[in-house]
Image 1 (cartoon, rainbow, N blue to C red):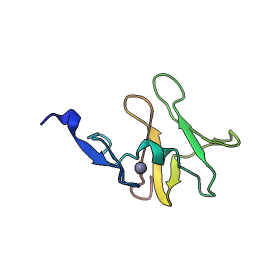
Image 2: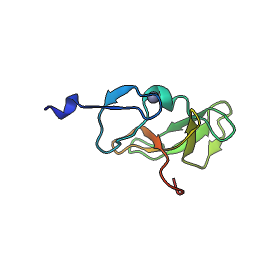
Image 3: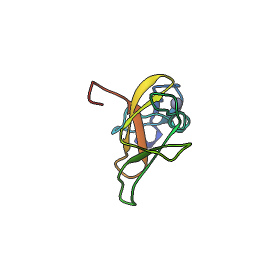
Image 4: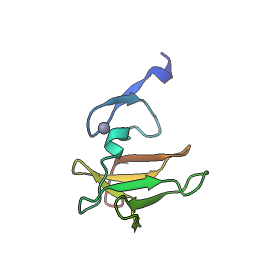
Length: 97
Ligand SMILES: [Zn+2]
């Protein structure tokens, strides 16, 4: 079986997307765009430079957010830089997420 054909489901909405062994529970693009903070403000995540890095801001105000935590459909998640660039969000695991 060609591994490039494998799929996995978004843990929030169930959308089918390309399988990624490194991120077995990553959120789909639509769900990433729904990420909010504890008070429901929309968040944006981005790489701080071409090589990666991670930064979060409140979308409406541009206020920096010093946290990887976000919420999607009420599910506590963690956003971080992806291994090969971009941002990946996965459901939080454990207290330190
Ligand atoms: Zn989704």
